[in-house]
Length: 136
Image 1 (cartoon, rainbow, N blue to C red):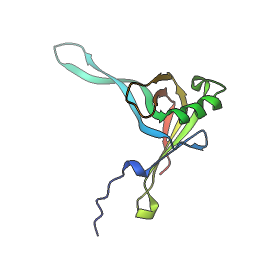
Image 2: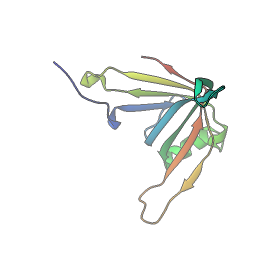
Image 3: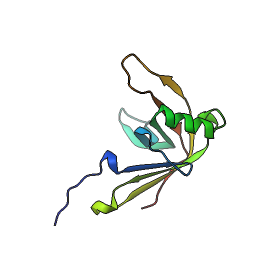
Image 4: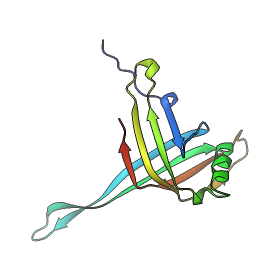
């Protein structure tokens, strides 16, 4: 039987520094490479050259989760260096688990913002990291 079930938000588990982050509201992480056309004789590129690979991401958490991370960093999330486990899937539903280990997370900013009408505060935490290891 064909199953077209897709992974959904409820299927995400994020472990940062060995702690299950339950106050997560959004997540993204990416791998990028520098690419540049090599021009020589003529007007058209001769090839595409590759450069450095960079890794960056962002998580958005509720304020209580941010405060727990801040305490773990002795008053600042900017002093933390952690690994993150991003696990997608629900084995109870028969999903194949997809697990990414994001190595060497270092947060680059910690800005709080709240506006009139908000029922809770969320904090976006951009980060850089060293590599992604596919566990499954």
